[in-house]
Length: 191
Image 1 (cartoon, helix red, strand yellow):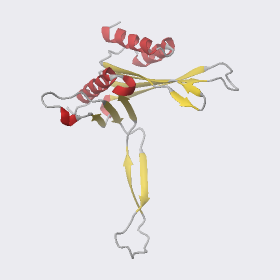
Image 2 (image 1 turned 120 degrees about the vertical axis):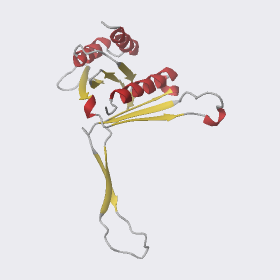
Image 3 (image 1 turned 60 degrees about the vertical axis):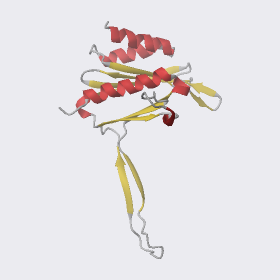
Image 4 (image 1 turned 90 degrees about the vertical axis):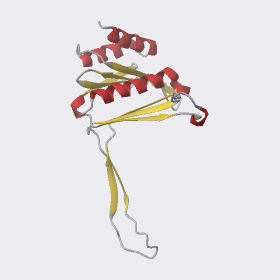
């Protein structure tokens, strides 16, 4: 096992969310390929009177972006015991059309000599797998106009998005997201 693979396994174990299940799913998807960079993001959500856990593991290899999600579910009619559901998607790096990193820096005016560390970051990656259409009625600037101007809209692609903040996830998580986005941007450059 490479050093980066061992670091990934350690990060999954540190998250503490079904580490054996999550590690098996991630490593099955990586399929022995070299790991260039990774992110592990554990995100519990509150649903009525329940806490449900979700973990996202994003792995960058020399040829693919691998997204692995594992969710926790309480028992139901088909499966009475609590269970997890894991999903993996592998995207060829040649398919990635955009890598957007949005960094938020608190008190930016207070920094004079060095670049401040962001307090929050959002990574958005688009490859055209999911498109969103936002439409709205087209309007005319004439307040007396009663004509139907049809619709106007936009097609957007944001197949994957991850937000981390220093307040919720710690400053190291923000730094890791920024570092991961730099590695992804570098590997998806048009050559």
